[in-house]
Length: 488
Image (cartoon, rainbow, N blue to C red):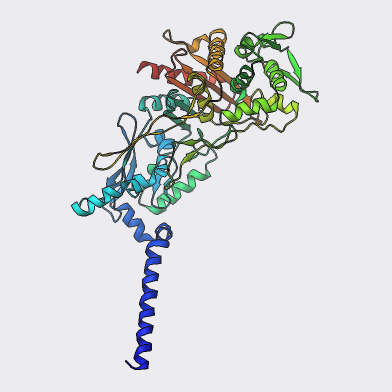
């Protein structure tokens, strides 16, 4: 071989090596990036050519599925009672892909691309069977979801409801109002989808925002559960302990007078039992109790219950975007006047409906806070069970004796102040909350569980920008859901 041919041979070898490296880089290193590029219409058609897995309620009711259609995309997503389940399902669109809810948190499974589905893909390759996404069964109870949605919608206000099974952490209902219809975003008409999306995001009521996990509200007197827990857990207070109260309380270092909603909250001779302070929602008592305990003590209990940290619903997967709540807030680097306000759920104290429901569930479950879950199980297209969710303890913020004492306080509040919350010989344990939100309106709350001595369901309800107290506005919503749950 002469010199020229040898040089040509080397050049060809180098070119083949470069070609091999380039192809390998595209297929491995850059594959994910190229697949995710919104300009890659081929990938979009390929993704929609595979039937995406269904999303089911706990009883097997289909709440999201892919229907065969006669267009280039082959399948189109459809949602049963879209607005009812939108906070749970999220949506799937040709312009935005998987967004929010289960659609986003279990996207890889629903699309059939999850690592756990590799064996199914291998079998389909040899059998010629069409690939398909996995089915996700949620913990949502359709009757509770409907009851919560109807009752909350009837208030005419924005708000949220979260119902939890205390012993397991399973979310039985998750409602956000106003809601939206994901079917509007599932259309294959890109102009219509973009128009619908812009209309929704520009709506001042934020219908696409899941207010159960993504909106913070001042919790009002429902936060007194946290302060009472801190007091009981300190060992310095019992249910019958006498604490300072009074008709008014001057916030430390200020001339601002804090008062109570009812005269019963003042106690007698400036003193009141912890039980009565809780039952009559005494602001003067709990503001002083918070200051006496100190920001670090109350803050530590709040932190143990999840304040300051985002809550992840389900354990999730590194392949997907988990559903997470925004972090509830209880600042501890504050002066005593601010601490007093924070201790009655005002000032800078804020939390989500999910957080408040988890607190009630923790009391109901003897002090054990369970990992909240929406997914009960996952099943492949050939009906093989891929995974089943097991209940797990997230934290134990207080002892069982403290939980029992808190349960007594919540039962006493119902029996002394709002006995109409009980129904059909079922004892309810609850705490109401009425928070001024700085806009001249009220965020009305109620949280609790039933039956009080054998809790099957814990719940939190928030009604935003209303004009009446927590009991009158949020109370009927809670009672409707509890009655439906206990009747099943």
